[in-house]
Image (cartoon, rainbow, N blue to C red):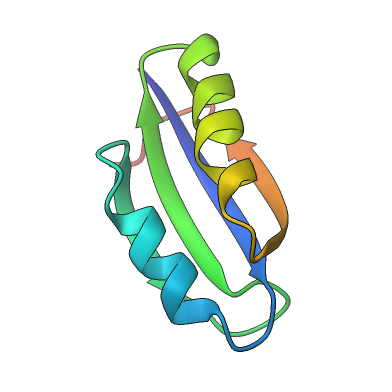
Length: 79
């Protein structure tokens, strides 16, 4: 299992729309609206890199009001 944290920048005024679209996906285990450079933080779990590619291509890139994402792949599971 691959655990990732994805930070999302959203076009201003569309935060709720993007948040609601992302929380419907079963691979999204946690989702938060955050303050700072990014607008939304996701914790996503996928079985392999191919599924992470699919999530990026089929979910993130199809939500038109996402301006940018940054994906961090966790190297060790937390406690």
